[in-house]
Length: 78
Image (cartoon, rainbow, N blue to C red; front, side):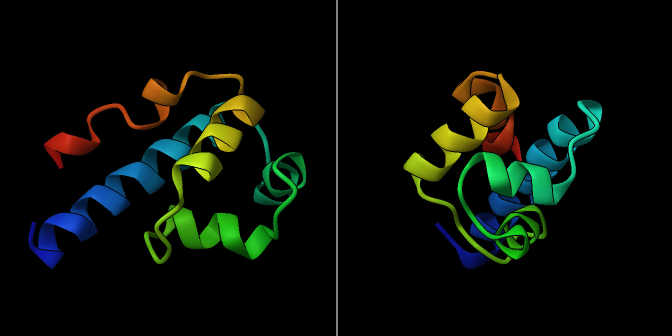
């Protein structure tokens, strides 16, 4: 997989997380608190600067009360 493909996937994932978070009117700070992480880490994920582990994704999904599949929906089509 090329770096361009990886970047597209991370951008799509970050966009999904941001969209789900904003639909629930949750700040990055609140989401970070819910997953016991730093606010800037959430921002880095949403801006595709960091690649979260599957454990982190599971924590984010739980904190947003969505399924893990909802978080990664359509990222393979990026």
